[in-house]
Amino acid sequence: MTSKGLFAWLAVAVFTASCARATPEQQVVNDAAGAMGGADAVRAATRMAIEGEGTQYNPGQDLTPSASGQTFTVTGYRRVIDLEAGRARTELTRQPAFTFFQGPQPQKQVQGIDGAVGYNVAANGNAARIPDAAAADRRAERYHHPLAAVRAALDPMARLTNPRTEGGESLVDVTAADGTAFTLAIDAMTKLPTRVITRTDNTNLGDVAMATTFDGYQASGGLQVPARLTTRMDDLTVAEIRVSSTTIGGDAGDLAAPQAAASAPAMSGAPPVTVAEERLAPGIWYLAGGSHHSVLVEFSDHLMLIEAPQNDARALAVIAKARELVPGKPLTQLVNSHHHFDHSGGVRAAIAEGLTVITHEGNAAFFEEIAKRPHTINPDALAKSPKPLTVETVGAEGREYTDGTMTVNFYPVTGPHSETMLMAYFPRQRLLVEADVYNPGNPVQMFAGAFLETVKARNLRIDRIVPLHAKVAPYAQFVKEASVPPPATN
Ligand SMILES: [Zn+2]
Image (cartoon, rainbow, N blue to C red; front, side):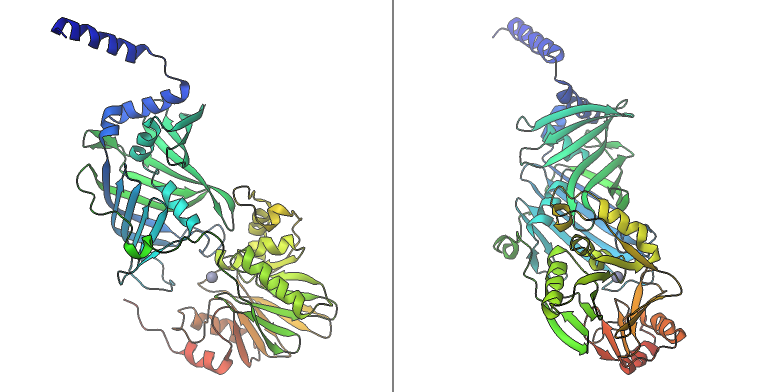
């Protein structure tokens, strides 16, 4: 080709590129790529590493259903993404910035995804495969950065649909070549990506939008990248990362899943549930066998269940066991100890089974909301069999349920674990049921002292503590252990 011929060919190419009309959905992606530094530069980026620090929140486990005051300080944040091979790994150290956190601290976390295999690496270096549903969330999380999202959207194998403008944003739905669906939102003026949204199932909340917003764009490696990443699950803030450096290209290191995780079998279904019953007194059974226990109470004409924990599978198994133990009486009431997601994950199943929910007055609005939320991504028992919620609440003065044959009192547990918590007291059997504030046989909780004061203030006469974790213990053991101040943790 002569130089004149080459020039003419280039001119045609430029003319074609600038004048070929992109579809509206492609235009959103083209605009984003252009604002970030050009489609070629975005495509050329095959690896990236983000370093920084930030904050993690405690959604579902904070003091009240709507609180967001409990945070973890994140340091040593390093996230590496292989944009071609579909691999990513995040390392960070987190330290609770609130007093009453139970567990190792500081806590180093290593979390990775390699195609279908998601894994965590423990402090001792052992890698373990995570369940498939969690791995799918982690695959989606890979696109929660504008470079990863726009690069995937530029892939000719990606499917772009539903272009739209909302407020000051233009949005497009993307199905990446690997099948992951996300929504890319860009600023209508600057064209820089503002958010990436993916949708997933949360056991308690049902369908949720996971959205990461991008702020503080700055240049790095010829591209515009954000300095702040804020992730929310619907309205609950999950994490904020302040980026100190974004490295485009370079050596990402070995991001392949460790052998122990890669060779482990996939975990697709719910793990098997075991319910082991133990008769604590006439008409009162301990339903244990897993990490979270329940208590069955027999009244003259009906049954009451204390706690529907974790998820549908656990709650439905416990409910089935209750009906098996006392087949002649209807199970009509569920008592929830507190709102924490691990203790309330089976409440929807109980509603689906027609049970009235009894809980702390501070949880009423929360359970009204929980009962209504759509679960279309992973329909649960209540989604398949909708029932209205009936809720009874317990206030500061407590509430007694009695019919002459059986009496149980519920009292609020004030204190630093949850502000919407109940304990159950059986005056005749001298039993006290509690969740999370004293787990006999385990290191004494920092809450134990406060809980002992709560119990003493009620002048209760107790022989045995019935915990919703761990094992039944004599009350004297609790008094002894709770009276010793826990060792300082740092
Ligand atoms: Zn709890």
